[in-house]
Image (cartoon, rainbow, N blue to C red):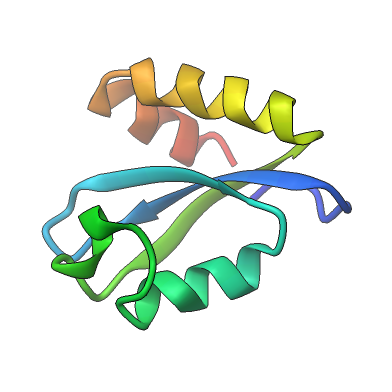
Length: 86
């Protein structure tokens, strides 16, 4: 699931209803804990439990935001293909 480097991460969570949520974080473990505690994004709060299914190091924040936007434009099928590629 991507390299372990410092910087920003783009990640995908699979929600309890099988939907996929894409976000960015600098401290990925802490952000996943926030989501799992119901204190993350509004979208994920009502879709617990969550599973981290994909992550990639994106370098700087601007790079992470651009990559997040790219992933969000993908179809579900394309996102699942991306997840399966790691």
